[in-house]
Every structure is written in structure tokens, then in C-alpha cells.
Length: 312
Length: 307
View: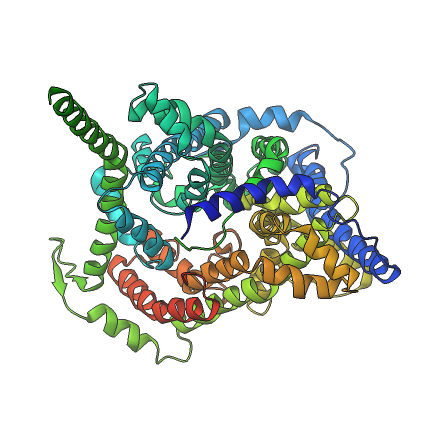
């Protein structure tokens, strides 16, 4: 594939969006207006339905007591505002919410170190490896690129038992050492990062080298900062993914429950007398970090991620 | 002469530094790749041919017992594996035939700056940034006893249906959930591709009188085809790993088992039984069955074809 076409098309893709914000200079015809009106109504209904989940969640989280929750449930009246409306459940969530004898604060702490730690490790190594494979010509370079593609093209099913056995043998289960597995980075995000590095001209590196910079200095001081917009998107989406993970936690670290996994466990135990309104308050609190991150970075997330196919 | 020697040594030194740099950047990722991908998968293939002797020594017998167990299990009318295969395919086709086209249509209207486009985009994307546990729990309470749907049924005098405790409704109930929470997931890639389209082309189509449908099918879809075809290929690669949020809803009960969840259950013991070796063998069988599908879809879509 021709390098220069990739560079050009990538920049065009990202900059075109701004130029074409209005999208079209041609006015909509009457027929189109009708189509757009119908689409607007349908999409609005869909959006409102999604938002209704949070409305309902607030109704559940502000019930006066667990008893009231049960009474409402029996009376098919869960979707209603409580007469004993209270916001205290939110503060109670911090003291009462407990899974595997771990209080809410510990769950929050586990979520934080797991999400931030594995994202930082993963993205650091992914960026380093991708940069070298993208910018340096060395023996085995194409082989490594091919390996990543093969790994993506052939998902091996049923390796979970083997994986569990290996993690156990290495002492990674139920341990912060699990973060070591985040070094394994030659997979998913590779292509996105590859296209970003490819779009950065090598001339910057040449200029830095003439000024006497070493390979490490070129990478850390010149190239890495330039790739930061892309890297931050990979980091944010990676963080959100790990914060929300529950199946992986269920397999590899159930004794170090994170918030997302705890919500799952708590929900399973609900029939056995857990405090429902407090649980739903915890649910709402758990959702906040990702929602805030998304609202801040939504434009970057939506516009900076581009894959144009797998062609190397 | 001395000068040229100097340059040569400097160049050699630079080459050496380059090699050291490349190694320093790649050594750990390659080791991790060898351990977490190569070793684990190689070991998984070996496990598929092992059968524990269950004599307390942890010894294993080598052979095809696991594969025999699999083919024997296919004979039963109520074969778990066949049911899991059926459900897996249902999830896969829901992805390709329902979720992707719906995403594409909604994404098109957002791209065309429908009223409140950005607000819609953020809301529809929400299920992707909040843990599945939350939406799933709320959905369960909305359609479960005590929730608004039950209240509505009571009002109109219809017998309530317990969606996730009924074999007839559990799968459809879960499919509806995966559809309505999964449409935003494709926005990132589809939206990125649409924003890269040259507006001149769209305007030219308009001047020629192309309506929204023509515009989407004849202008936008061919232009974003590299992205679209990659997405279809990625889904098809994982055809046998297609799955829904079973852990949150039915844990594979009420005829909702999928292949992926079956392996998950066999590993974690959620289905009450653990059998690492059998799960590895079944996984291996479906990995091999999936290969021709990957190649066929790739060939049809031409995703990895060189220009």
C-alpha cells in the first residue's frame, strides 16, 4: 500500500468533517422533509425510551425503604415516585452496599486501579510496539504485522479453560498482578493506532535526529505527543470498556470485585433480602464516571476513530 | 581517510542503537504475545486431546474422547450443543441483518444533521458506555413482575408473561434487549466513515434528484464500503462466538444457551458442571468450522484484497 495516499486520505478524513459541518448546500425537497420528520419522530421515541431507563432507575433508587420497594413490586407499582422520596440511599450506598464482604469504597478502588492500570499499561505498550512496527524497517516487521491480522482474523474459541489454568499457574488470578496481562497488546487497537502513526510524517523525526535526539527521545518527545489525540481516544474507550467489564472479572478476579461485577453479584443476591433502593443508588453512582468521561470526550471518540479496512 | 572511517563507525553505532531501540520497544509485547496468545492457545489445543483420569493424581489420558463425546451429543433430539449453535447463529444474524442496517439508517440521519442529531447520538450511544449490568437490570425490572409492563398488562387485563422464566420468550426478550442497546455501538466506525465522505458527491447526487434512500444506498454505502465490509467481516469472523448478555438474564437456561456461554459455563462452573478439556475440544471444533466462513466472507467482501 502506498504510504502517501494513506497520509493524505487520513488527514482529509479528519479535516473534511469540519469543512462539511453543514453537510450539504442543496436544500431538502418537500418529500425529503417528510422523510426526515418521520425519522425524527421515530429516533426521538427511541432516545426517550433509552432515557426512560434512567428515569425508572431514579424512581427505584429513591424509594423510602426496601419494604416499600417490595410493596410496590407486589402492587405492580414500581414505576412510580415514592411518597417517602429520599436521597439518603445514595449516601447509604457507600456504607451498606457490600459484595464479598467488600464495602463500596473498596469496590470503587478496585474498579479504579484495574481500569486505569490496565489501560495505561496496555496503551503504553501498544503505542510503543505499533510505532516501531509502523516507522522502522527491520527483519520480521511484516511478520509481526501479519501476526496481528491473523490473530484478529482467526478467533480461537474454547481457549478460556487453558487461559484460566495458565493465569492460575502464574499466580495472576485474584491478584493485582493480573495487570501484567495488559502487556499483551498486539491485537484489537493495533490497527487504529497504526493508521494514526502512519499519518504522522517521518520528517519530524528526521529534524529531531539532526538536532541530536536519540531514538527514545524522538519517540517520547516528538512522536508520542503528536499521536496523543489518537492515544487518548484509545485510552478513554479502553477505560470505559474495563470499567464496565464483569465477565472477565467473574473469571479472573472474583475475590477482588470491581463495581461492575459487584452490581452483577448484588443483583443476583437481590432475592435474598438485599436492600433494593440502596442497590439502585449504587447502580447510578457506578454509571457516573463513564457518563462524565463520555460527555467530555464524545466528539473525539466519535470522530477520531477510523478504520478503512484491513489492507496493509 | 580517517574522516570516512569515523562516519562508518558512527553509522554502525547508529545502526546498533536502532536495533537496541527496536528490541527495547518490542521485547515485552512479544513475550506477552507468546505467553498469552501462543502458549494459551497451544495448550488449549493440547487440552482438547486430554481426558482426566479422575483418580486423584491429576493424570490425563490422551486421545479423542472429548471429540467422541461431542459427536455423540449431537444425536440427541434435545442436544445442548445444537441448541447452543442455533442460538449463536440467531445472535449472529441479528447482528448482521437487524442491528447493522438499523445502525446504518440512524447514523445516516444523524450524519444528515437531523434535528438534535448530537443529542440523539449521545443518548443512543449511552448503553455502550455504561456497564451492561445496569441496562440489563433495569430492562428486567421494566418487563418483570412489579414493573411498568406488568402494570400495563394488568390494566388491559392480559395475563402477564415472565419473559426470562419462559423458554418461549427468553430468547426473543434477550434479542430485543441486544438490538435496542446495541445500535449505538456501530456509530463510532460508521459515523467516522460517513464524515469522511466528500460532500461534493452528495450534492451532485442531490442535484440529480436522489432522495434519502437513493443517497444512502447508491452514494453513501458504496463510499463507506471499506468500513462497512470490515465490520461485517469482523462479525463473521466471530460467527460462533456471537453471544448475548446471557450471564445477566438467564445464565443459559430457558433454551437460551450459546456456544460462547456454554464454554464460559464449563470453565466457571456457572452451569454447575466444569469440564475444561471437553470445553477446549468443542471450542477447537468450532474454531476449525469457522475458518472456511472467514475465508469465504473475506473473499466475497474483498476486505483484505490488495489494491
